[in-house]
Amino acid sequence: MKFIKNNTRIDEQDDASLISRYKSSGSLEVLGTLYNKYMHLVFGVCLNYLKDEEQSKDAVMQIFEELVVKLKVHEVQNFKSWLHVLARNHCLMAIRKNSRHETVSIEDTFVENTEFVHLDVDDTKENKLTVMEKCMETLPEEQRISVDLFYLQEKCYKEVANITGYDMLKVKSYIQNGKRNLKICIEKNSGE
Image 1 (spheres, rainbow, N blue to C red):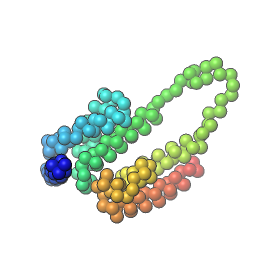
Image 2 (cartoon, rainbow, N blue to C red):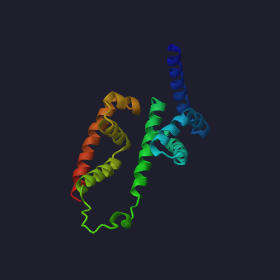
Image 3 (cartoon, helix red, strand yellow):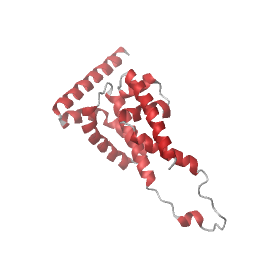
Image 4 (cartoon, rainbow, N blue to C red):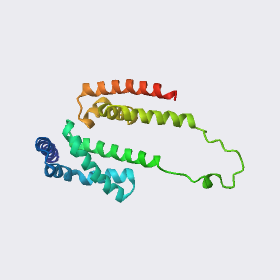
């Protein structure tokens, strides 16, 4: 068992040195070497969320393109965990974007239906969720990720810090500020 733990530490050190080399050189070859170690895991995450092999392959490439920019600006302690969160968030955004474009045929809904149909049965709840989603997107990335992990995924401060690589005090600050900013945004947009 100790052998496995030592390999994990070596992998984390290798990841850290590759990240450092990429940040200093901007070499896509270095980034490709790092990403290649975890590409199969990223594909698995994408397949789990997107349920489509071709979409998942596309997502793997799009996530690499995101890495080119994001890895230069983020301090990443545990690349594997951070990449998992990045992949998951990418897939959730893709799902959300695709669901906005789904259409329903009026004929399928109302064929042979002579009764009056009230369309806003649960409209209030749906509107609140829509406002909350839009407000989440306006938060700075650190706040959005921290709030998502803490409130929506019910992670503790320590888990949020481990997943994101953020310092524990920063996590608490991001969650507190994110919650306040989210509340202000929701109150401001609920009247519309």
